[in-house]
Every structure is written in structure tokens, then in C-alpha cells.
Image (cartoon, rainbow, N blue to C red; front, side, top):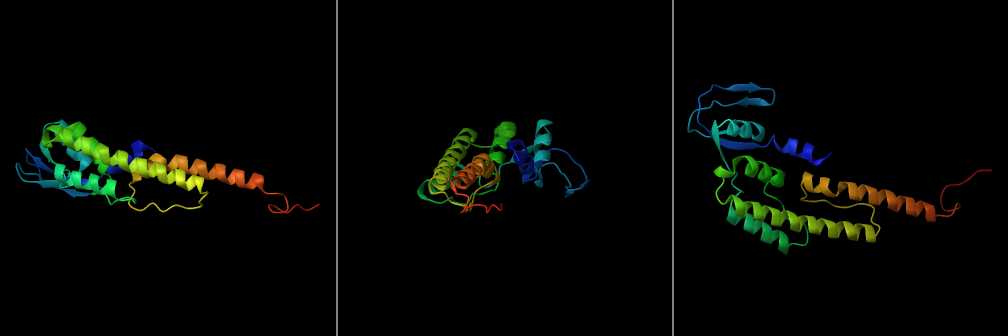
Length: 185
């Protein structure tokens, strides 16, 4: 899975919009949405919220966790903890990117939020790299990935699988024929 596919999955997350149009329920394969009434909040998937925002049909309400104070707490907790702290949303990075790219005018203190999420991401990726380095150095066979998001796993996944393949090849090439495979003559 690549980053585009992870972002595609994130677009299914529900967000709240304030529509400026009227429309009865919309019946989609993924479920019913609406009704849409001007000024009344309604939950829709992110992909629809972005589409409506681009057509100037709504205002997007940022998720509750997308607040400077809450994000500062999350960033500080991530820096304090040796393990990965739980994130407010499994797609926090993708949601932030999409919302700030398409609806930054609806998000108070958008620049500060962008910086805080990037700081948190950088801290988590640095931890992930240190964990990966330790994993490879100690020749571990498995890893525990608690509280990592799909995008974070995607970022380091190729490195992990290639490292495991190289470690396997090195281990098998160092074994003598008696220790490794038995050969029948």
C-alpha cells in the first residue's frame, strides 16, 4: 500500500459540515447522508466535505482534536513517552493535510496546527527510525507496533521488510550445511 492509498482510506472519515444549501437525504452505497439544511451541521465523509467546500456549498467544521491546545498536549506527550502515544485519530496526518489544503479558511490558527501536527509527526518518525535501528541491530524477529497509524507503518514498512529479508539471507548464508538444510547424496 502506498501513501495515496492510505490517503484514499482517510477520505472515508466523517467530518462535520455546515451546508449553505437544502437537499433531502442522499442515498449512497456507504450509507445515507443528510438531509442538508442551511446552517445545520451534518456528518459526511471527508471526500464529500472537500467536494462541497470546493464548490462553495459548505463550511467544514474542524474535528475537536484539531485545536492548538490539544495538539500541544499530544505533541508534548509524544516527546515525553518512550513508546508511541495514542493519536486522536488513526488518520490524523492525512486529515490535517487534506483539511488544511482545502479548507484552511475554516480552521482557526491553521498555520499553528500545521506546525504542531508536523512536529508530532517528526517526533513519531524519529522514534520509529530509532526503533527500526534497534530492531535490526539486535536482529529481532518481530516488532510490536502499538499506537502507530497506517501512514506511519506505510512510511517504514518497506524498510522493515527489506531488513528482514537481508537478515534472513545473512543468517542462512552463515549456516553450515550440517546446521542448515540436510543434503542427501
